[in-house]
Amino acid sequence: MRRYGKHTDEDDIRSRPNRKGNRPRTNIRPKHEDAAQGMVLTVDRGRLTCLVEDRVVMAMKARELGRKAAVVGDRVALVGDLTGKKDSLARIVRIEERGSVLRRTADDDDPYERVVVANADQLAIVTALADPEPRPRLIDRCLVAAFDGGLEPLLVMTKSDLAPPDKLLELYGDLDIPYVVTSREELERGDAADRVRTYLDGRVTAFVGHSGVGKTTLVNALVPEDRRRTTGHVNAVTGRGRHTTTSALALPLSGDGGWVVDTPGIRSFGLAHIDPSRVIHAFPDLEAGTEGCPRACSHDEPDCALDAWVAEGHADPARLYSLRRLLATRERKEGD
Image 1: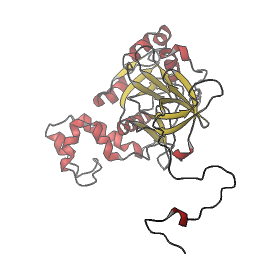
Image 2 (image 1 turned 90 degrees about the horizontal axis):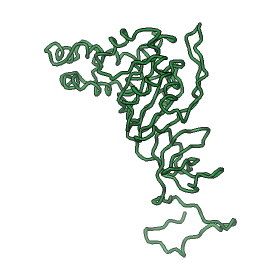
Image 3 (image 1 turned 90 degrees about the vertical axis):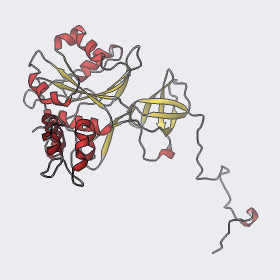
Image 4 (image 1 turned 180 degrees about the vertical axis):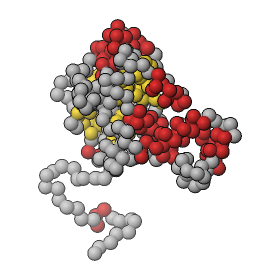
């Protein structure tokens, strides 16, 4: 076998003739320094709708990105036809670093995580107070995913005309989560959308919720110029709603630069990808008390230093209870 040193003569190297007459392949990829910046609005069967400046551009992922997928909310670099004209197609050549990621798995035994939305500032967890009944375990799981992904949670309770919010507010009061309570009448008048919008201005907010809770109806009220289908109903036997949103979609709020991301209704929220040790970061009043914890402490065991920390008056016992309830969500199913 012939070997070459560092300083080879090019005439010494034999090259295979190129019968097709095109350029030989190379591992050196272009840097695309002149690529335009855009934001992914929605993804549908390999085609990505992106906003580039003030134009909506259809694009596909470049081959050099491999299996790395772009999701709604991603900041991307695009080349090719950026006119946005019908039948035009650009290429996404780079996915910029994400500031936050909302992820979930199908269940707690599924190793494959799904990125729901990237670069969102806030997670609005929408739950009905009745029809269908609230599912606190599902809310807990959404909260854990929000804390883990770097999103601030917002609890939106709908259908208060059917049931009072007192029990749910008591359950989450110690977590200091901002909340909005709405009724169907307020939603029809527009009052509900106005109150929810005060939490959305200038931010990217992802909306998640169980099917049938009125999530997409609320999104339509917030962004009336881009109405989505809301013809689903709640099954009287199972209490489950029909999915009316089949793909995540980012919609701009008028005037202030904020965005609403409507996501498909969820029936489960797996947390197989969550490292429980990161959930404590959402409790800064308790985090300092973990310094005396044994290595790899689950914060729910006899030797946990948080018990003494709270007993000494450094934090509210209700906060420790809330932390442990969230940490235990992986041990319980959403319907419990």
